[in-house]
Every structure is written in C-alpha cells, then in structure tokens.
Amino acid sequence: QKEVEQDPGPLSVPEGAIVSLNCTYSNSAFQYFMWYRQYSRKGPELLMYTYSSGNKEDGRFTAQVDKSSKYISLFIRDSQPSDSATYLCAMIKGANNLFFGTGTRLTVIP
Amino acid sequence: DADVTQTPRNRITKTGKRIMLECSQTKGHDRMYWYRQDPGLGLQLIYYSFDVKDINKGEISDGYSVSRQAQAKFSLSLESAIPNQTALYFCATSDRAGTSGDTQYFGPGTRLTVL
Image 1: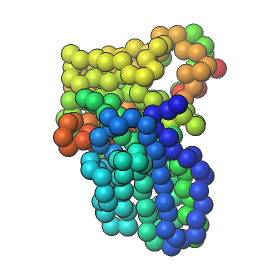
Image 2: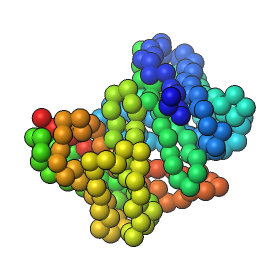
Image 3: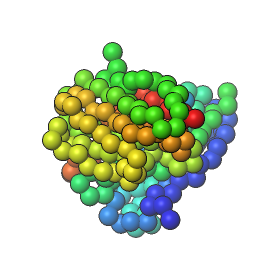
C-alpha cells in the first residue's frame, strides 16, 4: 500500500464549478502538506502548503487538512479553463522526505 | 532565465548506454533532488543532496548514481540504461526544511526514452 493515495481521475468540470481534489495518507508522521500544480510538459509548481489541521485560503484555492482522518483536500472555486492541469498532493515526514500522490488530472471545460 | 534548468530536455538512447542528465540552479539553494515520474506512479525520489558533500539515496536509487559538482549543479547518471528507466525526470531544489515545511522548486523535466 502506498503511503499517499490520490485518485488519478481524470476529472472534467464545467467552467465556474467548484472542484474538490483529495488525498489520504496512512502514516501519522506526516506533518507538512502541500499541493502542487503541473501543467502539461512542465515541472510541478507549489500551489499551497499547510502544517496544521484546518483550512487555508489563497484566492480561489482552499487547502484543508484533517489529521485525525488522515485526509487532505484542495478546493478550487469558480474554476477556470486555465486551472486545467494535474494536481499532486505531497507531504513531508522526517528530516526532508517528500512523498507525492500520483496526481489528479483536471480539465475545466469552457 | 529559468531558476532551475535541465539538459537535455529530450533524449532517446539504447539499452546499455551511459546517460547523464544535468541540472543547474540559480536560486542559491543548498538542497537538490532528482525524481522520476511515471504515469500512474507519480513522482518518486531517486537521490537527494543537502549540500555539496552530502548525497542520499531515495526510494528508487538502484541503477542510478549522482554527482554534486557544486552548490548549483547536480547530475544524474544511468550507467547502463535499460528500457524500464524510460520516464520523465525532474530536478528540484529547496532551501529550507523543518518547522516551515520545505518548498521544492522543479525544473522543466527531461524526457528519457531507452530503446
């Protein structure tokens, strides 16, 4: 079993929809949680990171962490075609071990 | 100019050949990483280096070696390439860890095909 599980999708939504992306993890040692966005033929870029349980907002994006359930989410409000990308969750345990989910490919249809 | 660059961007080679992928960064970061990305498997860590004298194996280091020539340069070598090393390879850098997390910055990737 992988330490970080993420539904690969693909996920297609109409423009303006609310998107929910999720990951689960099995090891309570994970302390820092991140979401990366990867456009086609590009490297991943950091979108958001958080440490504690709860919500963190940045514009149209909200990252949510529930450590008791070992579950993290990324919500995208008012989704735009430019949000079409693969979204990877990532989390850190120990000194510097970053573990990635497999990524969810999102398409926002105009 | 990009902060993290990788060369080559694409490479096709044959089984048994030695291949070197290079990564350079202008971010001034101490930490550098090599990942491979395969469909359905996500990103897997191959090697990482916290400074010029430090090299550490990641999840999938077998068949790979690295060299940290300078703070800004980190090379990945495949001594004898095999077809299942066909993948997208990413270099990343970071400058902090611990209580504030560790933001990694990725290069554009190298697409390697081993025939």
